[in-house]
Length: 249
Image (cartoon, rainbow, N blue to C red; front, top):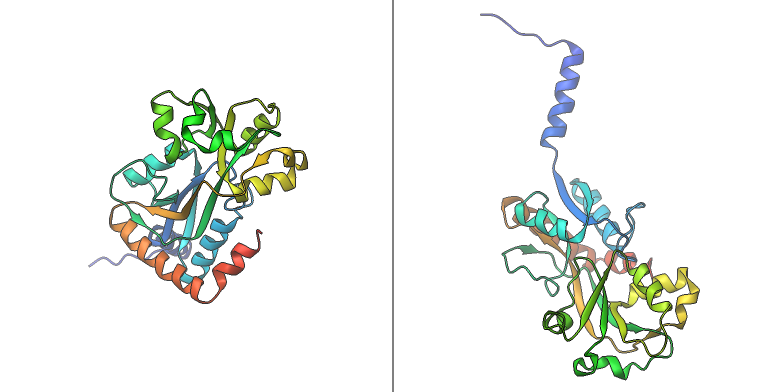
């Protein structure tokens, strides 16, 4: 019988490789653009990122990030190329089955229009004929999808929320261009770009949606959805989630 002995450095390599191969990791796709205050690409900070970091620290599960466009991330989670992505059940167009996290934070959408324009002209869909919705590539605006599809409303797409706000900043009070955006996102960019404060913003929201993680409908997705939801519930119960949200207000 021939005995096989591994040299010490091969043993170390094998152990490291084995640990890497079998390490528990959550593969998550997040937007390649900032979505303040929920997600910042370069710093990996934001409400969602901080929750994920806390989840990793509490469970020992490594987070493997992929930063891709919205439509690409939707395709990846559907195909199981990643385990989860940032989404809301309310925004979802695809009717395929998925696993979902609990609500992480509520996103409140508001109307944003040019300075001096009358909000009442934008609150009713019948008043928007010939109007222009400024939206993000890959984003869904449930209330306005049908008017856009019927061509009663035109849609212009941008790569970032800041580009949208800067475009509206150049408009006059007679413009029929508008956007629907998270109040937190708008407020964040106004803090960083005070000149944008002259834009007209609705006091009353035009919609609310829970920010969630959307998990692939497979064994990995089911496993991670349960583990994340268990953690998220405990984070809510002990006040940890409220503290994370407070950092960005």
